[in-house]
Length: 484
Image (cartoon, rainbow, N blue to C red; front, side):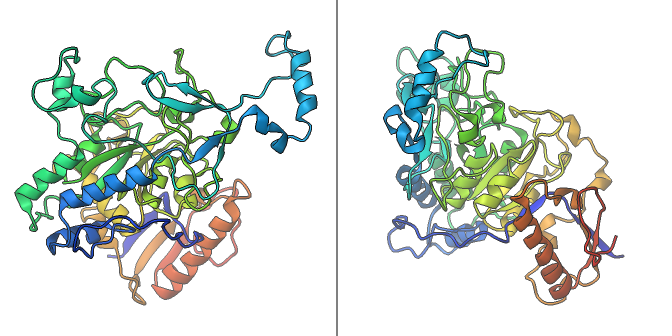
C-alpha cells in the first residue's frame, strides 16, 4: 500500500538567519565535553548515558542560564524621552492639556500617552514590573522568556520562600502549601532520576528522560504558578492537577522546568470580567506582554518584538537555549509566528489530535490548540509521540474535541516517518500540501511561503522523490506545476 502523509500546520523555518554567537558561554560541568547550547533530546540523553553529564548537572546549567539571561530586555520610555520619538511632542502636550476636561470618547479630546513607569504588581506587591510604554534595548543580554522556574521557594507566590520548604512549615503558611512542598522542584526531579537510573535510563518507557520543558503559562502545572500571564492576586496560584499534556510528559521522564511568558489571557487584553487589566499599549507589545513578567525580545534583534503571537515566551525560551522543549498554544497564529521569527521548528497538530482543554486557560474554545516548539523537527516529533497515552492514545476525557475514531491516528509512532534525507528516501510516498495554511494574508507571509514552497519542490519532490499533491483554496495562486 502507498503511504500518505499530510502537512497539517507543520511550520519549519527556511529563511531564518544563523543563530548569533553567545555573549558569554554557558558554564559547563567540570571535565565535561557536553555543550548545552543547541542541545537536542538525543544530545542530552547520550550525554547522560556516556557519563559526560548527570541530570542534576544539566538542570543546574539551565538554572545558570536563566539567572544570566532571563529578565527585562526592555526599558521604560518616559516623558523626557518623548521628543526623541515625536518632534512635535510639545504641541501634542499642549493639545492634551487643553482638552483634559473632556470625557474619554469625545472625538475632540487628545488622549495622553501612557509613558513607561515601574509599579508594584497585583500578583506580588514586593515585585515591581514595567507598565506603559517600553522599548527594546539594543543587544540586550536578557529577554523575558520564562515567567516561573520550578525552583523551590520561587515557584509560587502563595507559597513563597519558606512557605515552600520541606518539613514543617513556618507559622502563617497557608494550609495548601503543605501539598506544594511535597512536590519536588525541577532539581529534585533530576536528582530522583539520577538516583534511580544513573547512566542507564529506561528510554523505552521514558523517551523524554531528563529533558527540561517550558510550558506556556496557559497550561496548568500543579507545581508552578499558573495564571495565563495575568497580573492578579490569587488565594492559590497553582492548580490541583496538571494539564493532560503536562501529566503525559511528566510521566515520560521530562523535567517540568518552567512556565514561559505569555500575553495576558492569550492576548485578550486582560480584564476577563475583573479589575485586573493589562496596562500597556497593545500595538507596542505585539500580543506577547505579561504585565507581571514582562515582554520577550526577539533573540536576533532585541529591539524588536519576538513576533505577533501570545506564545512568544515559549519560542524565545527555546531559541535562547533556556529550555529544550517549549509547549505553546495557538488560537490563530500564537505558535506559528514566534516559531518563524525565532528560528524554530514547530509541530502544530490539528486541534483534535492533542488536548488543550485538558486544563488550560484559553482564548477561544473552538480554536485553541497545543503546539510544540523545538530546535529540530525530529525533537518535535519525539514530543508528539510522548504525549500519547499508552492506554487512551491521544483521547482526553477532559477535552471533547479529542473524541475521534481510533482509525484517525496512525498505528506507528510519528518518529518512524523521519528520514535522514538520502536521495529517493521518500519515493512512493504521497505528501499532501494543505494550502489553506499557505495563503499570503499579509506582506510578511510572502517570503516565508515562497521559500517553503520552493523547498518542498526541491527537497521533498526532486531530492527525496515524494509525489506532491495539494489542496485547492481561495487565495492560493497555483503555478501549474502541482498535482491536485
